[in-house]
Length: 53
Ligand SMILES: [Zn+2]
Image (tube, rainbow, N blue to C red; front, side):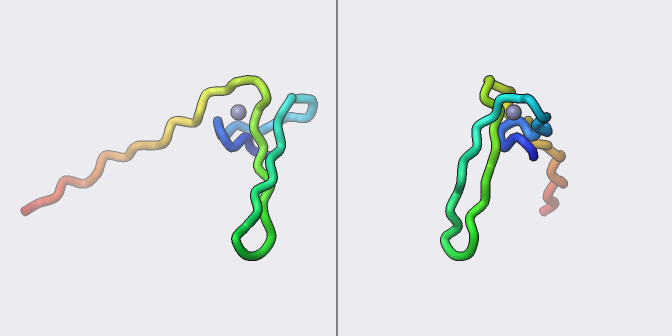
């Protein structure tokens, strides 16, 4: 299981919240989040290739 907020794996024994998300069609998914506040994962930023004109 991976925490949906910080992207870190949840370990057995950790407190976490479970949330079911219904899919518009088809089966829903279950996401997990640490119960204690955790840092959101920093989105990777790759330098965009410079556009040439
Ligand atoms: Zn987390």
